[in-house]
Image 1 (tube, rainbow, N blue to C red):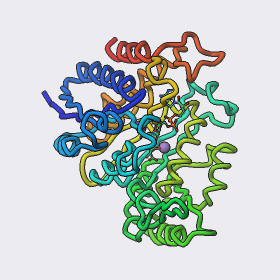
Image 2 (image 1 turned 90 degrees about the vertical axis):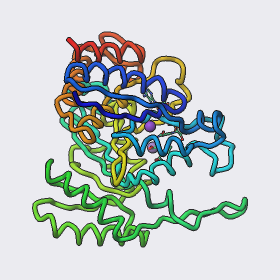
Image 3 (image 1 turned 90 degrees about the horizontal axis):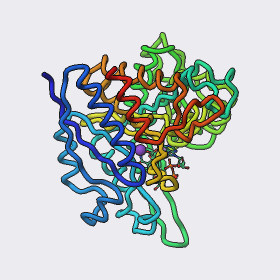
Image 4 (image 1 turned 45 degrees about the vertical axis):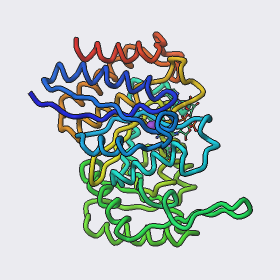
Length: 355
Ligand code: NAD
Ligand code: IPM
Ligand code: K
Ligand code: MN
């Protein structure tokens, strides 16, 4: 029987609550599909600061490198917001992504028919929407030098090199080839040099993909278009900060930020995490939606472990549960049959898989 080593980082806030549900569902599906998962837990973020004094212990990096894939919750919280920047949970996460070389962050935003009434947008605007946001994850303004804040003057640098743009662009075009063959590259080329290089490079690259239609959009317009007519998009490719913002926007097309999973892939171990954060405002209340994390686990099965049937089973179970009217609080609307807490939602999805 196949056995996979999974590194698990639960993190802070709702992190442990949602990751526990994903593990519950993974255990249910692995039984059904005849493979086993060996989990090892590692610390990161606030809990790592409290326990070890550092947001990203070396043991975590080594453990994840030694695993087949990493399942991640969320990190951060007010308690650590006043620490010097190098000691903050978010800095640990960025360093972690950099160490793993995960330059491509895939954030699918798919509107399930079952949830077409859950979005704050009109059903006819969103029904059938299926967007893949391809966000560059280890470059751009998050990592550019110089950066500083001396109390009077502060600055960051948005920088991309051509090879960095090419490698993320390739991911977007390759994905588009398996989808509707449309890539929309989002930038701010009307203002920024870095975006001009981004746009020129995407145009050059598109010559290698004659079947794919490339378009360009400024990021301000893209934010508006996502809400006006999300179905116009197939693959969106963009830099680190624009992708961060646009994917949170896309989540509200789908219905809730608690629904959007992600895969961060690159040269080493891939990381699978919901796009949302540690949600301090609801941590410990048992009301967080675990579906984004459970879908991230499904992406892990699909992309890192090649357990396609298991990934399909998870996604089908989620759709079935939603179709039967079960919702978490973030999705509670007039068509909800029953509003479940976090663990009950995980239990139900696991039960649908094993039945
Ligand atoms: P957030 O994504 O944590 O929360 C935003 C809002 O969405 C909150 O009202 C929250 O309750 C709600 N929400 C988020 N996930 C939910 C879920 N699964 N179910 C139901 N509701 C959900 O963003 P924020 O409040 O801006 O940030 C909180 C902390 O999380 C910060 O420290 C931030 O840096 C961190 N953060 C971490 C990650 C990560 O670990 N990758 C991502 C984003 C934010
Ligand atoms: C995300 C988060 C992170 C990011 C923060 C916490 C560093 O918002 O994963 O989307 O900006 O990448
Ligand atoms: K997260
Ligand atoms: Mn974000």
